[in-house]
Image (cartoon, rainbow, N blue to C red):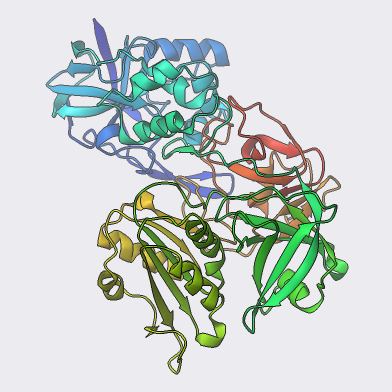
Length: 587
């Protein structure tokens, strides 16, 4: 019979790490006597990052004596004591290759159910002083696993562990972990995983998206191991940058102009997906090449590309485009990219934008009109006034070609008027105005505009009943950071890294408008980005979880630590890579 050797608890604490403060419950220590286990955790225990650990499905973490013995030998360590892997229960028995998702066990007065493997996380490496530990746990098939509390009760070290019921598909913890994090996944095991009711919702979503993605293993990239795999983008073009010719520049409003682009050599341009963007690189004065991304506002079936650019007061590239760029000029352009795209389906569609945020939604509207899509469509747009309302006539024409469409225009200026805009409303969209529009709760919503606009409108739609996963947003500029457990600090404008200037290849962070030479003083591209105070996304920091996967617009990298699974073509794991030549990253 398996045995509970140690009960380990610890309250979250602030720990200094790489110049930052991490709030973590990874520091556990053994306790004596009985401890009450409740639905969310053990008496005296807590989790610092509830997005990745804790909660009803991850109330108790289990690790095995046999794995401790394995790591003591593998790492040459004699200082590994129970609780150091962050586990609540250290057990003799219950190996990861035998315990199955959905297994139920009785320990003391309580009953538990196995819900998922441990989430790969940098904090186990931080606790052990082994930075690659998260990758090692996966690669060596020794992750440990979480339990849900079925029946609350007391447990204590020395209690026997009794198997009450076997999981329905008998899919082991080690096999389940490998399905998400390792290449060459078995489709049959993936289908079995989806038939296990006890599997936690986050892992179910991950496997469902992997099953729906379709391409062979190794061609998908995960955005976050907790939130599910990232859908692969369709390959629509060329590697790096190529020269396109400006054919026309059309003023749309006093501050917005559309730039029409065609191939310089007459070859057809590949068709983008509705909602994607182009990254443009143009030398501007003595500053060298400047890279910015602009949504395609043209129909996906158009022979040429159209980007529509707002002249920002201090925008280097937008200022150049408005003042200097002329028809006939050549510009360097990366192929269409982006996962903010119109999805197929039958649900109603909400296209909501403010200002220049209309551009990707305009491409979506073109696609809907070109196919005479029968889904109900709500077009919601906010502009300062009629003079600053771009594409007003074009959108009205497109909406008129749809069998079931309605338009709602908001002008925010107090004196705004619009004789050719019937039914416009003064003021910004509100929760009340959205309710009055009759948007159904099963709609798919696509939002683009200033962050405040998207945050407010997204909140209104969620309150209206739309699920989070059906509210899609496009954010230009740096993406919001994902740094689990790191205590938030005041935002700092991206800047050159401290210390001597590097002598290596130029690294450009396109979203943050920053270029800097590479220096081997940095452990990875992620480390360089952090030194520049560029918002970053990561979790394991060892090439496992794919949270850090980033579009590589041009250039090439080498992996300083080989990932367990390579990301999809055109992307890179910045947590474990360094540039081999000039690179442009979508960060």
